[in-house]
Amino acid sequence: MRWTCNCGQVELSVTPGDGTRIVCYCASCQRFANAFGAGDTLDPAGGADLYQTAPDRVTITKGADKLSWVKFTPKGPNRWFTTCCRTPMANSLGTRAIPFATVLSHNIDDKSGLGPVIARVNRKDATQTITEDPGSAGKAIRAFIWRALRSRLSGRYKRNPFFDANGTLIADGSPVDD
Ligand SMILES: [Zn+2]
Ligand SMILES: [Zn+2]
Image (cartoon, rainbow, N blue to C red; front, side):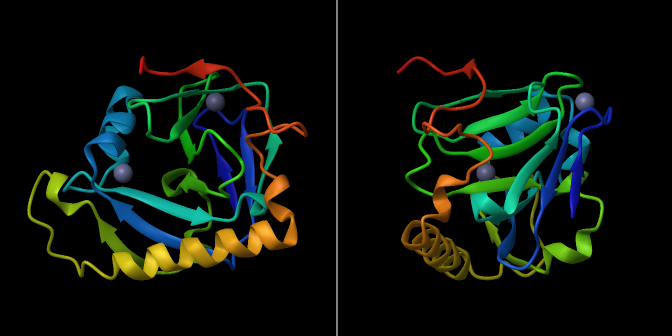
């Protein structure tokens, strides 16, 4: 699958097959979209369509020098966006020790590879009543834990598109004050 920013200068390749598609209604995901003029990518209840996968399944194939990130809370994820056209792209953690990569599904070309939505999480922050099946947040968490364990045990966690060989974030960003 290919993720492309709105102007086409940044591309990710995402290997399907070991990922979890969820919709997150949390205020922080909504803030991310709205702050970057991408409120229209949220569903009617404010949900962000997210694809969680192993970091080594995500590769920056174009425009790695056109990335930055923001953090909205000290403990929250790094929220990556492109500097060419400010497209919200992905969420990661500040350390690669916990293998975690979430790509925002909206700009992925072939959504059939994402699989079905298995959970709608943080529904308390939804902006209207959600009528779709809430799915299973527990299932999504278990999928993440097993995926992270496999990444750690195999050493594949070191291949993380957001970190260089030394484990340093590949781009500067804007952390919030602690
Ligand atoms: Zn762009
Ligand atoms: Zn969220």
